[in-house]
Image (cartoon, rainbow, N blue to C red; front, side, top):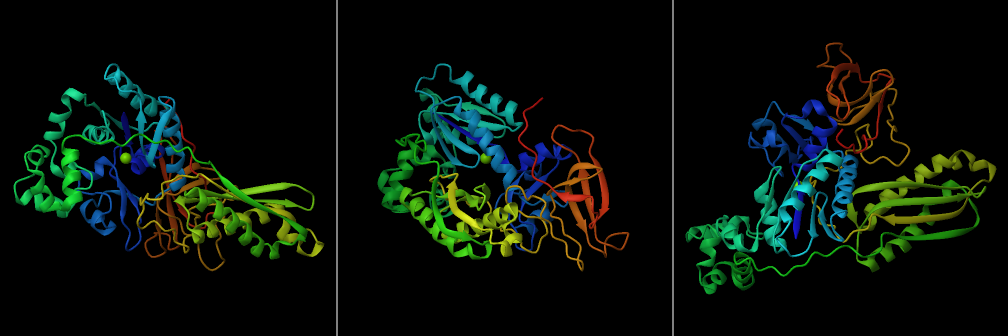
Length: 452
Ligand SMILES: [Mg+2]
């Protein structure tokens, strides 16, 4: 089987869509006071910057780095594109995180070298992103192989070579061997997989407990019976309610809640989380309008789904004009909630500190069709998040490099530094604009583009 894992995924998407950063240290994560690094590009890793590190530490280690907020929509689109490529190589694919999957491709070693190279090349060609690919007889070996191949590599570990491959690895390479277990083992000089194999099982059990000791010993021998398990459950669940009377927009809140709770019950029954919440309305004229809001990761938490549903409903109401027709007796005849993007994985703790800050002007997860809902008030200039997509009426598409508050801006008014460039473009132009420039708007991320 194969294990495929994108290299420095979030940072690579940033470098792809911001070509001027292609060889820069790029650090993606929460940029606020207590923010944490989500992903660092390989250029940034050379400065000792790594995932889950406090952003303040990353800034100290790599002052010349480019620090940007995560753009989950762009990462998700690239994730979908990568998985679509992988799907062509197998019927049995198990996605285990946003940028990682196992593929069952048959047991024979014959032809595997060509296959892993073809997989990596296809992903690169269609998404512009590099993945590492490992091949082995088990999930354990395939994953360890892709890790050893990183970055931009492929590694096939045949059955014959398996034990010597494992033996040379540090014991910390084995899944589940954390710092505490590693410390106990290395204290006795057990620092490689080979050294683990040399121990009697009772020594390992004494150090790591019965389960831990057995598990480490099994892994050290390459024994892993887990199979690649594709998601075969439902792709979506939904619920709807037909309303007895045309119901004005202002009274739809309780209806939304009832319908959402019904859809949520089906979600729980399926034992999965949802990533996309779509609210559909049929209005007095029988026109059906739907709007979707996507949350950063699949969840079954009712509170998170409710937040998304409320935003989706607001977008639908605005799109139908029902809010303005309160007086005229117009209303909704049917309200439906559709929960999509179902997946059994809820564990993607990718962004420990990436909760969108409501004080910021740019919507992190805009409802479909209202991407430019920046809402400046007369008293304060809009604020722009570093890394965010923008489009300027005259200057075209670009991204926010940084904001300059009034004290730091030479002009004495808040400014924003924007770099104008798109995927594959080598002519980035950087401009300083007033933060209130009426020609500057928030934009959706560029779509995934194939290499030309
Ligand atoms: Mg990865």
